[in-house]
Length: 367
Image 1 (cartoon, one colour):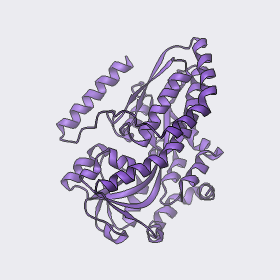
Image 2 (cartoon, helix red, strand yellow):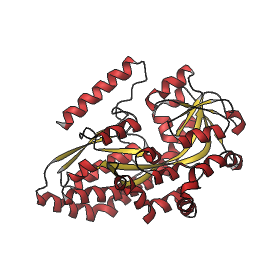
Image 3 (cartoon, one colour):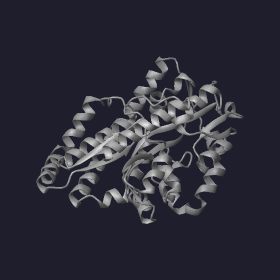
Image 4 (cartoon, one colour):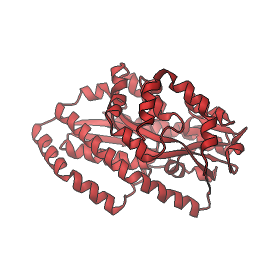
C-alpha cells in the first residue's frame, strides 16, 4: 500500500507544480558512478561485515518492510548518490527484508514539507535526507549550531565533529525532545555559496540584492548582515523566482546548484563558503519502532557505511562539478579574503550561539 500511496502522491505533486507554472522536478537521474578507486575502497572495507550481516538477517525471518524515503535533490547530486548507496546497503544488510522506496527530485515536497508529513504520523513518509539546520524547529536545537556562518573552516573540521561523540548527541536530540524523529548518520554536500543573476565580484555587490532564503532565522540574519534583502521562497519555486526576477540570487552547494539547472537563470557563482552543507538522514519513531532489532541494526550499519561513502565522494564530486561549470561558461569568482564576510556575520553568530555558547565552542575547537 505504501508504494501505491507514494506513487499517487508523487503524481499529484507533479501535476500541482505544472499547474502553478513552476519548473517541474527532473526525473530521477541514474546514480552517477564515483571514482573507481573510491568504490573499490568502500566495497573492500565493507564486504566482510555486509555479507555476514546480510546472511544473519536473511536467516532471521524478519518481516518484509517498505520504507518511503524523501529526497529534495536529484539522484546525481552528492546527497542523491549517498541516498542510493544507503538504500543499497540497507536492503543488502537486512537480507532483503527492508525495501527503501527512494523518491527523489522533490516529488514529496520541500524539506520542511517532508518533516511536517513525517511528524504528522501515518507512515506516508518514513525517512528523509535533510539539511541539519532544518531540524531547528523540530526538536533539534543543537543542530542549529551547524548552520552558523563560517563555523567550519574545512571539510576535515566538519568530519572531526561528525565522527565525534558530540555528533551522536545531536542525532538523537529530536527523539529525546519528543519530536517523533531520530537521526541515523551525518554527511555533507559541500560548502554553500551564493549564486546570482548579475555578476558579484565581492561582498559590496550583494548590497540591496533580493536573496532567496528558507524560513530560517540564521539564514535571514546572515543575508541581512551581508547587506542584502532576505526573501523567503520555497525551494520548488526558486527556479521560476530567479527567472521572473522575484529574487536576484540564492545559495546552494555547488553540486545542487548545477543539478537543479540554476546556472540557466543565474550564471554567476561566488565561492564565499558561508556554511558547510551538513546533512542528516532521519527516520520517524513510528517506522523505527516497527522494525525488528535485526532490521534496526541493519539500518544503523548501513548509515555508518553511507557516511563513510559520502565523505569519500563529496570533495571529488564537487571539484568535478566546479570544473564542468567553468567549462560551460559559468562566471565563478573566488573569495581570497573571508574576513569582511565573517565580520558582517558577527552579530548573527553571537545572537544565535549565546544560549549554547559552551557547546558551540566545542564545535569550533574541533578544527
